[in-house]
Length: 254
Image 1 (cartoon, rainbow, N blue to C red):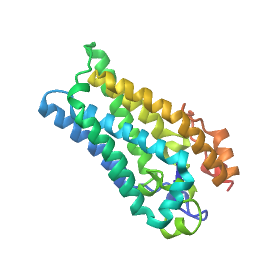
Image 2 (spheres, one colour):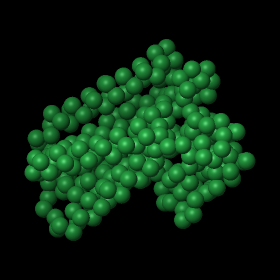
Image 3 (cartoon, helix red, strand yellow):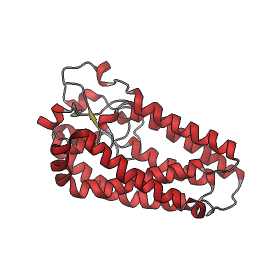
Image 4 (cartoon, helix red, strand yellow):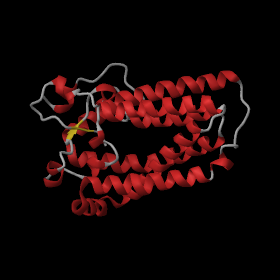
């Protein structure tokens, strides 16, 4: 859910503030995987990381949006750190450990394809990661991991400084869901690069889950941002980027 932490009176420069933490950590994680696989001599870390990250996200999504009100009541008693510990500590890491345990089997679900297909996959992974860095840089930690959905406007959002402004900066001026677009292209490109069938299956599962999530997420954003989000829906496509960036002032009504 994309929200921004500046007030309506803030300048355009402040609205486009770059958040370094999640963006550069995202880039570093892939650099480490590729270097590690070069040392190992086969694709191991990259497919495991991609599968664990996105299937972990699927598990979190399935346990979050359908039970959003229950989770809101839960985090009201336990706070932001409690949510991070449950989400990352139990759901994400738990899913990752299961995938790692079975990795010796599914890592061998490969095919032998032409080198040019792997090259396309490599380019796709690179572009997807870089655009993801750009998008994550517009958000920051408190816009990620469903935090805005769990802390709607009010006392809890103010207590934990959870942003409550629609993001219309960076790639969000071209497409409404740049991270979801890069998620899908990244999984598919990683499948081509590593020639791993399990990543193809991961992509199918992710798309199926995303179909459900987007419907619930857009309903929530309509309730929260009203006319602003309606203008954003009309001006900016969901998945196919527009050629020219939208003017944020048109969306904010300023």
